[in-house]
Image (spheres, rainbow, N blue to C red):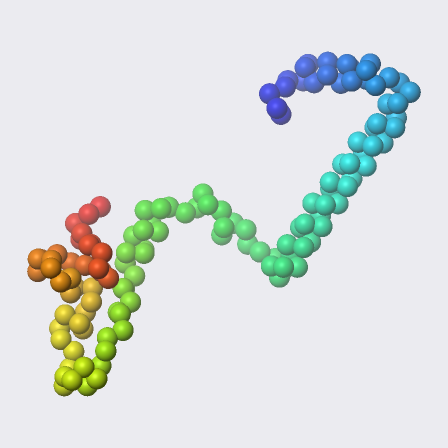
Length: 131
């Protein structure tokens, strides 16, 4: 607690008692008690407000940051299928309505100006051999 051991804390308390004096000590002790009670009431009000806002019992263990593995999160994010961008219909573009193979699978389509072997996801390069 603040880098103070038990002996130092005892010396500080004794010096405070000597400085305050025995006449004013009961009033200061009562004032300290009132502050502690008021602080406890504020904490309890905060807990009650949180329970009302959240809606009852909450499993706080699922929000514990120690349970998350960043490697797993990235792996799962990369494993999710990429959302296909909205393609204009072929009839509106003057075509037959059939999609080209590159437009059918945007995850394997190469971006304009890139070699055919590069794989891109929504314009960002994606290396399948990266760890």
